[in-house]
Image (cartoon, rainbow, N blue to C red; front, side):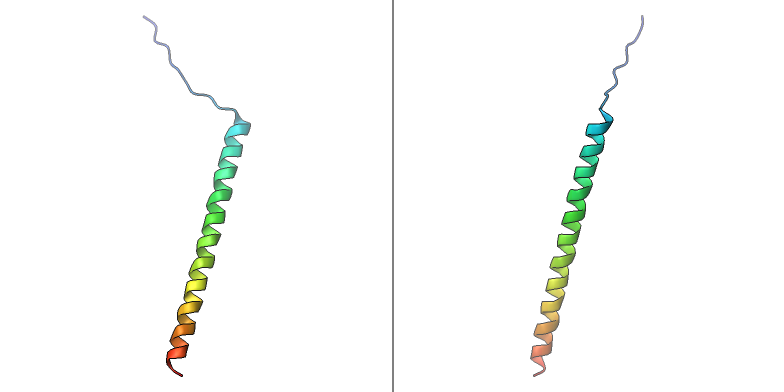
Length: 53
């Protein structure tokens, strides 16, 4: 009895495009999170400095 093995194949181009798209989304989200954290940090510093006046 012979066993057949199925393998999933993908086009390299579409696979690369998917990886690129996912990487771009990740990087965009990462930079958005950094901007948000920076904004929050600046607001905290501002409000703390106002407490001393």
